[in-house]
Image (cartoon, rainbow, N blue to C red):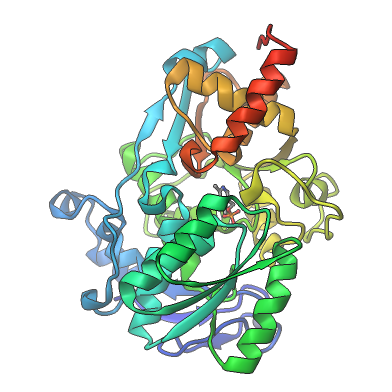
Length: 400
Ligand SMILES: *Cc1c(COP(=O)(O)O)cnc(C)c1O
Ligand SMILES: [Zn+2]
């Protein structure tokens, strides 16, 4: 294992990675896992990967697990990177790709964060954890928690997709529903943590979830033959996926595997777009978004703890942030399914709509290699299709 320490990206304080540490004890910012990249540079060999398991654990040099016995696995896969030939050329792209995270255990990319987060929690001797969630993260941590024998306390908005509530229930997690948003769920978790002394697995309040999500970035680069695409679009709520992909790219650059970075794009819903707003004004942090509401439930995050890291990733890669309406989300979810046979989640559909917007306004060039992150399976959101059906009935002539 090549981890050297945990580091605060704000005040640069350093913490011991062999203990459960949550936020920076000086300034309460999220902590990042740091590796001995020189050593990795000497040891890591692309060719060796050929002999490794075809899942995220193949990148073990870049992961924080000390003893492989602690790995908790539910059969993670390297998710497919699909070229959208039909739909891409209909829209005017020459090289449009979609990375389909819907094939992960639990049907969303949240299982990457949970696989690494739970494995590390097990390694550190954690017995129980609590977390607020919009659904998928709670479900993923609950199922991996069940496999690891770690008790899960999950707090989610009562409007979160029913299937994610059921996933928590079926594996025996303690599930609490709140009449509010993820931030309200967070307040309840904060109280419980304080009272019962259990680990806080809230987004970015423990450093290992990012490491799991980082593997999306490693995979994309490997899948392109150790080259980077021009643009990556990511549906952004808490932004951990984007922060993780950026961290992966920086680590790969530091060890000399890549030399340029793709432009990173945060995609949000029109009625919950704090990062887009902050990006417009070139701000370093976002402002709490009042009355957040979108069909893309996983990205209903009015104010993210790691907003400054998301914005840094955008600015440093010359990326941008784009918002799309619920109507566009549902329209592109339907059109992609119809033309490519892919039933993606509304969050993923938001990236399709955003990519097309950026192509039309010239920010993306037709020749550029563009990757959309579909963060979950459409099968987890059967109701969005009923809504779309109604939409289509009122306007049967949908054209691009
Ligand atoms: C959680 C979630 C997101 C947002 O992920 P972050 O990395 O926290 O921004 C996007 N899509 C789906 C399906 C999710 O469950
Ligand atoms: Zn700090």
